Length: 163
Image 1: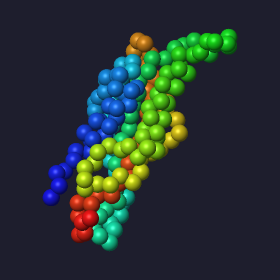
Image 2: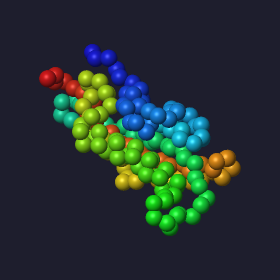
Image 3: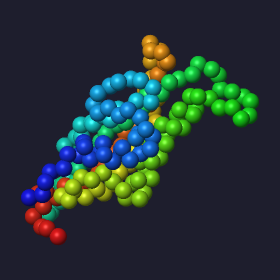
Image 4: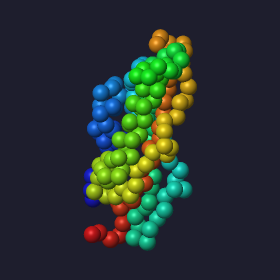
């Protein structure tokens, strides 16, 4: 029987290859809201998503979210050419994480779920990050952006056939 792979650790190892994530403090299932901190949160997946195939393998889904905290500016958007808004720049940087994940999926570069799992697809569930709110009770004020990533895979641990 093959060794069981910790999918949480596999996802963390994978995400640490993203330049934006690698350059920042990363927390797992723990919140530390500070500028540029990242949080990886695992989500429960409905067991009804599991689909058993004739060979005994099972189609499954693994879902997680990335929370990205960024400082916010209270200045209006500059109208002079050559100047940009800190808030627009921060959102663009967060968008880069989603773009990186989708690029990895296009390249079929996935987290390593081990030899008993075949990843079929990895995708963000939206085209851009969600602004979950702004915490003005801290200095600097922080915007909380989030994105959800879904990995669909086939678990072959109960397969009756081997190839």
